Image (cartoon, rainbow, N blue to C red; front, side):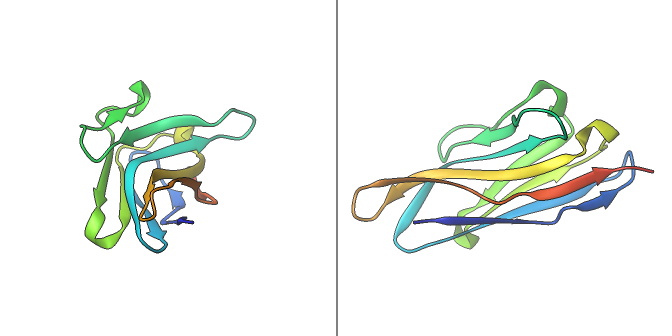
Length: 120
């Protein structure tokens, strides 16, 4: 099994920036698709950004130009840089990943989430 753990959430002022990290841990695996989702109070979980190991990232329209997803496979870490944040970006942000295990099976996993609050 592969475990994902987010960090970096907190309180940020409108117009500010915040960086989230997602650390993957496990044995003998490769990670293919990584993504960030978010869930605001009273709303359904929605995609923020997604990227595979071989394709360019894709972003939800409201995040284009403000958020950047990246990955450092050597550090088993996925990042989400959030710039020019808005109050409507307030949500719990979840990391998602999937890939293959060394023995040939597949895996997919969610982190437990990290809360981002945008408020003055």
